[in-house]
Image 1 (tube, rainbow, N blue to C red):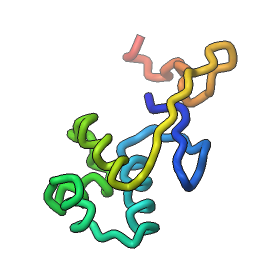
Image 2 (cartoon, rainbow, N blue to C red; image 1 turned 180 degrees about the horizontal axis):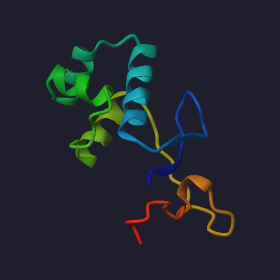
Image 3 (cartoon, one colour; image 1 turned 120 degrees about the horizontal axis):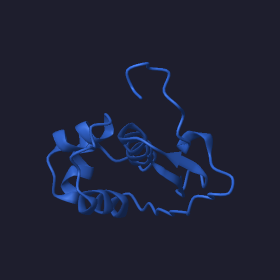
Image 4 (cartoon, helix red, strand yellow; image 1 turned 60 degrees about the vertical axis):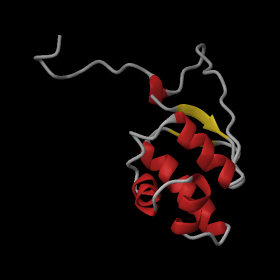
Length: 103
């Protein structure tokens, strides 16, 4: 399950649900700022290859601290809103499996 909404400079209602989404946001913002991967890596104290992997959607091993450092280095802000449980987003609904072995 992902964060329902994330605010950032480009789209105040962007949905972020995967590591790939985070990678796209970081890459887009970095390039908007005219920053190289090496420059971003230096700002957050990581190797350039770490930034490459993050931007490629391999953020699964990134710590919350690393994500916060990235967001600060790129002047991004995150807003998390509670889910409206009365009117659930279909993305988060449990859909019954059609697999006969999964009962």
